[in-house]
Amino acid sequence: MIQSICHLIASREHGGMEKHVADLSRWQAHNTDAQVAVIAHPRYLPTLDERIQFIPLNTDRSRHHPNLVWRLANLIRRGEYQIVHGHGSKSAQLLAAVQPYTETRQIITRHNVRHPRDKLASAFDARIAISENTVANSKLDWNIIPNGVEVAAEAAEPITQLSLTKEQPTLLVASRLIKARAVDKLIDAVALLPGVRLMVLGEGPEKESLQQQVKTLSKRAPGLADFEQRVAFFSGNGAVSQFMEAADLVVIPAETEGTPYTLIESLLHQTPVLANRAGNAIDYLPEQYLLETAEAEHLAEKIRSALHNPALADDFRALYERAADSFTLDSMAKATWQVYTRLLPEAVA
Image (cartoon, rainbow, N blue to C red; front, side, top):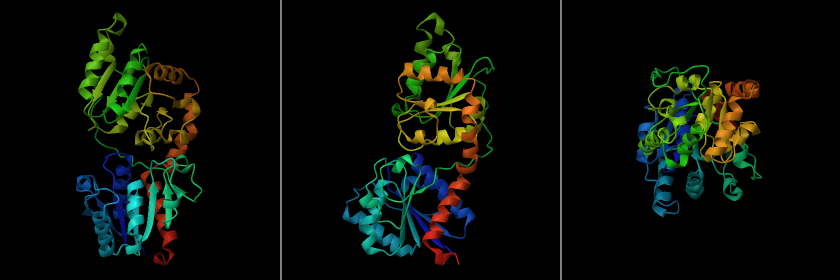
């Protein structure tokens, strides 16, 4: 049997890749007999399940720093792991650097690199990518395993700030409120769509600025006098499912790499979604639901088109079925476990 696994995170972010590792390691710790460890910067400890063995390592140092490579090699040797699973480009480079000093089988997952360096990737025993687009220009064999989400029935924050009616379509943007997520552009787009309402779910340094933007727009013209009533902000403490179910359309305007978890959650909750094609949304959505830019006029045009499309439900029906089969945490984790067992067939006997 597979007895010991170690994941490596070497990034500085708290995004989709880090959520992927937290969810995958938790599933493995609760659903297999393996001891599961995570090597990462101390800032990631609060994101991990209590069953995970956390091994702190200052990965903020350069990937070429000899002390970082040597410390990582020592940690891997000391743990005697059967598999070390690295996530992201920096983790891949670090694992390649320690290969001469360790005998552990190594796996990498490519999360958001469109043009992977095959010379580096070829050094590993197995390779996983979260989408076809992520490794579109690679000549190597990859196991394509989409990100998966655990849909939990949580106690949700009541949606009381919007009077939702069937006559007034409602949009949802669920995001960390930072400049790169283009929520300000979406607010400008909603101002161009009379009667359309927007739920902004999330926290971040731009929240106050975005709220002020709504107030300013509401005073700009008589036609926007109700704008403050049409846009409502919610903290991220409630269950996303309640907001997904209340929305007619989820919008992901950010030009982001990787697969936004909001996209997957939308499909699992059977809510149509528009997303920027800059990420891996092209692997999931029909062409007409891909955003070319985050400019307000373009967003407004695409939103209007989607909301007035009589075939909207039909366009997404097959995607909802695919999501239920392949985009859950259980399906992602089981597919990853199969990669492990193919790598260590002797451990499954």
